[in-house]
Length: 179
Image (cartoon, rainbow, N blue to C red; front, side):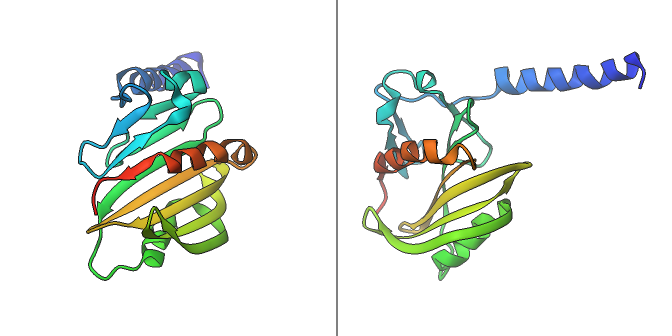
């Protein structure tokens, strides 16, 4: 490959990555590490944030059609909360299976019916692949009044044990605002 061809390939990649990181809309936490969903479905308190989440390695991101994303740039660990309308008669196992389609080569380690803050939920722990990275994930699908809360944590498999406790603290900080 000639130097000119390589230059034409590298330049757009660098430009694209700069645009994505510098221009992307990023969510801002309120004082004290709290976040309020603009649609009014949930609030979060992130106790380990102190005043600046970046001090702890976590960054709030905005993904299209996803309500809340917290990403640890150093480890690749990711926490997601998404709220979708609940289809009449849909069971949580079916909703969970639909959600897990995104994980390639998945192996379900455990799946349990639980109560999550008094609500019916399915908790699934799995291993699989996301964008060519081997991950381990813990997924909660929680029934709300007319909505379904998808609460997801994944991290590279070797990082999962060191980051899952932050996810469990994250779960404690969730407050559902709808019945």
